[in-house]
Image 1 (cartoon, rainbow, N blue to C red):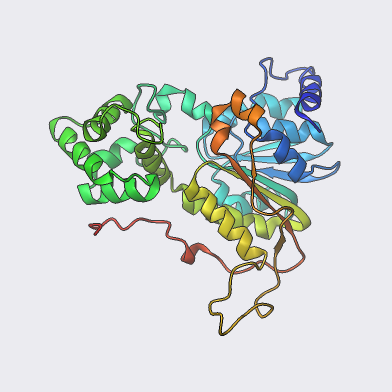
Image 2 (cartoon, rainbow, N blue to C red):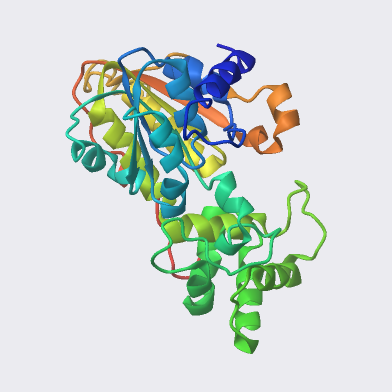
Length: 351
């Protein structure tokens, strides 16, 4: 189903009483997500990152099915209630972390589902709200908490030692100038606490300058990314969500994951390669092909899918998006990959 046909279905569905009056948010790679997920009548699907409801809305429009939509952000859940009301029991909203997907779905009295889709990272709705503190382009409180509870980004930058800040920015932001940025943050907070996004941007600019870096991104991009990922435990949540989906999916069920940066994508890629039995053997002298557990996923295509040029022109955020997917086999779930992935940086001095 192409995007124009999908929108026709969506707007038709929105004509019912109590449906949202505003045009729907269009999530990244919607066509590819729907084609890969392949919703069917009578199916049950999990949207692990509800956000503004774009994927859930599209899945409900594509088939006479049900969707369990999970989001840790209470604002997203509140904003989705009109959509849930418009679909009369077909959309179940659940507030919680998608890493807790297995428990959250089981609490709905459901033991298995036909598909899971997750769109990793911060939502456009969160970025566009200056009060949430996710964007370096909008001045607001330095918050970045997806669940709106726990330690904020301001707590992190104002309390952690310089070496710890440097390693967080280096590990989760892949920022080569992390040491200089951490020094600048510590120097700035010694004069006054860093409580706004603008104040953090100024500290970063003191370290790296106001000119855009060689890859033409804003100087503060990687620092903001790192603090957000660290503060929200995003990589741990991603690993937990992938394993939860493996346990929930029926044979033939599909897991679709859209990532936006290399840290996320490496985890998703490793998971699918591992689950499809395609990891290289430990030694060429002791090949282990065929001796390991049966693959729990089959891969519907090699590698990943990317956004089309048309979509990138319409939405630059789609440029970095990668879609990977797997189709559940009837093999039992495999061992956890969490221990094999460095999810936490070394907060001591980096040599």
